[in-house]
Length: 59
Image (cartoon, rainbow, N blue to C red; front, side, top):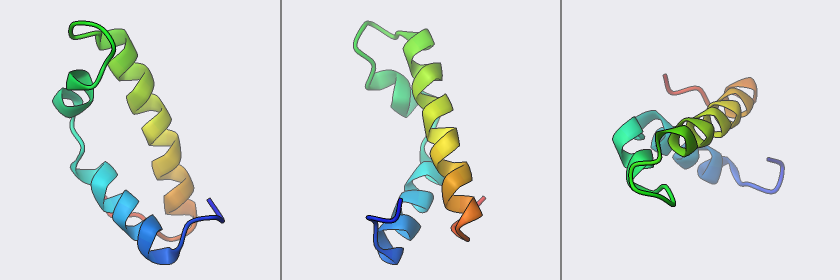
């Protein structure tokens, strides 16, 4: 995450906060691939934790 600017980190934290399951589900490869959506959300959760550890926690 060191490659990102403070503004980029803040914007990502805000985006992740507003992202919902249906948004992610619409972006999956298959027709409403819930398993893939949950995997994506899990990865996003890890990114949120990383951002929060750096002080970008908008929850």
